[in-house]
Length: 460
Image 1: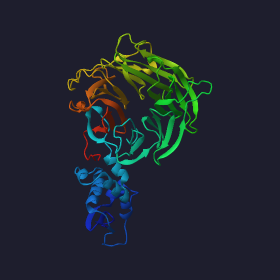
Image 2: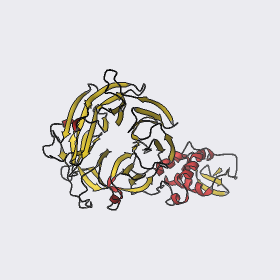
Image 3: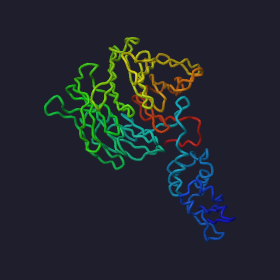
Image 4: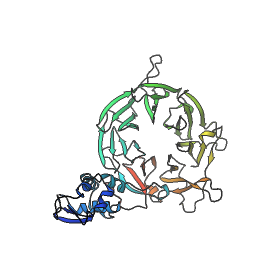
């Protein structure tokens, strides 16, 4: 490499091919990179420094430095790993990362870009995604497969469990997991594949508290929350200290002999309110029944609850909830009705006996799903509410009203009509700017991204 013309021009000999660019192109984009160091004035005169690398892939790196984007055809020529290896060598991996990550997630404009299938036991039993970089952990059987921000497979950890049913990231690369057959909450460091420890719910004075299994997990800054279910149907929510993995508090113990007292199968932590939300749903030939309950972990008291059928059903008798989730940013509770598929919302700060407002939207641009038997799953993410009814996936987005300017929610279908025929959606997760969807009895996790972008690197 040589710098001439007052230090403005840079020549590079990569694998025998000469490249020429401005020094500012390199130094402004990645000032701490190897290329930036080599673009400073040297004593090589007119002889460029020789770099023994592939010139074709370097052309992609140079385009990345010039535009901040990858060429449209780069994904068809080079694999993700080849691009990542070269970016790491040249010191421009941060720029490549920005180029490879999708644009902001807009549910109404998202499309399926790939499906990630673990090598063994490909049907996912649980999954979790990080909000920051959209990395993904998939539990399948007794294994956890880890996929990094680029959705490259970073490794698979074989646990001592046979059937992982719940997984939650609790700190760094540590996962808290629960099994459908083995008792206890178990912690693994996935970066090193190392078992960290376990927490069990026991009570020497109560013989019913025995071999308690974990049904749901939620993380918070103050500890991990997990719901435990015993063989004798006793259940509770425990708060567990992250540093010691010991039980810090038993928040709510009950005997799960009815739909109103079954173990919470979903937990959500609200950091702004300091509240824990849990729900349980029983499904049978006569429909669904269950509850939503909110605890204050500081007092260990229930601050609000509703059971369906039961209280809070004055306008929806016989149409009990099928699932619930919480918009953490706005403190809004959402539920989906098992029969009608209607989506209800309630402000957690204004809860009463029947606080639900049922959402409606006549969007002429949305195709009609028909009678899918009601919604099955709901998931809140970045002020978007994603709801699945059978195989169809809807999104309710917050927009400003035309007249009042107050926020309203508008419905649209995320998928096309053909997409909905692939199978019933069982899980929805979101992380970074990606949406992850799994379907009942089907291998793999679908990856959805906003469609108006270029330079997509397909997952292999």
